[in-house]
Image (cartoon, rainbow, N blue to C red):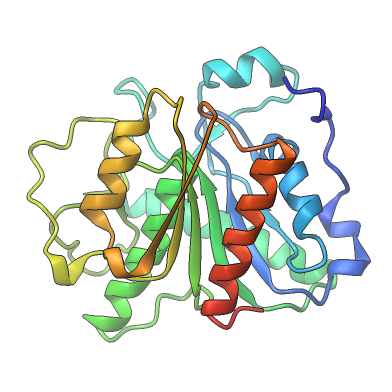
Length: 272
């Protein structure tokens, strides 16, 4: 653990009255963590963004095994949660039930922050690892519902995504319409091989503006690169690489670059 990290969040976001009016990204933790752990992991980033955004952390609905890195540092911060199945022995669930649980978790985070007095628009999503997959899947499902089915998603109209160490496949987060090709349903094992999936058509790729953050020492880097190149419209993506492993950037220089990338994307999408 870095000396710059603390074992507690910077502040309880719900009690920070100075940010109540700011635009809000929803933040999705990785598999085998939880919202409080993610708040600690993002504390340097949150501090750098606190004059611009109010980060709202969403808690995944399913109990999960902790990831190896989580056990090393945050073993006292259980229970550990996950958005999707990432091992075949994980609890079986139906796709409609999984979508319902995920939507309920998102609604709970939004409602609790509104009750705390926050009034800023929900403008984007930010996710790490499995949370990046979930964040991208929200954007993609919303895009397909609006552009193809001409339906509203029921979520706030997200304008951008910050995807840290995201990987394929994206997940279909709607129980009422058939999912497009090249993705999986919300009951699938999210780490299973994807060679059997047909490629996504160019005109059906994720086109909501996204910033992809890749650690060049991350063992999963090839999977993150595959997601960027195979699932996203290149005209809507920005890539930021940093010299790190499978974690959130924390050094000053890396945070500065990440913040600049987020602000640029937010300005381009009229989110700030």
